[in-house]
Image (cartoon, rainbow, N blue to C red):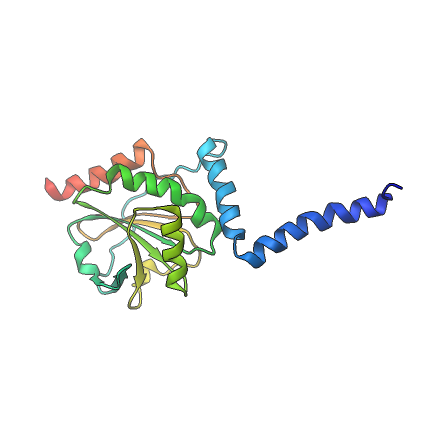
Length: 198
């Protein structure tokens, strides 16, 4: 005996909701969402490249971060470098979606001594972030807030990415998922690095 029309309709809703519920309860929902969004971005189906805008004010170098080993890092260490700052969390699907692209960017230019990457994690549970980074085998450096952030870095939504030039000026800000590992953005980072050296 087959299912009635109403039973089929109920099943059409129960199965997806059940899968969604399992992913939610297991904590894997952001990762699944992020993986799907990342596939869309990497496929080129949606252009997620960013427009570069300059002169967005200056960053107050008066805050402290901690690295994954608990070492304290003063924001004054950023001075004289081009700094790529990305605010993210493991519960944020779009954050997870852009991580592979940022990792590729880090692999491309992360060894440049004049460019600094600051992946600033906003999770309440730091261990969750460490476990995520280790499982994904990302090499980019992860930092945590050790003091209040300056107003320039206080954001309402994540992911949000900033680029600070060697003189401390905020020369780029983007909220939402984006693809950074492209020729134009790499040229932008390198050209601002050269400002310091000229």
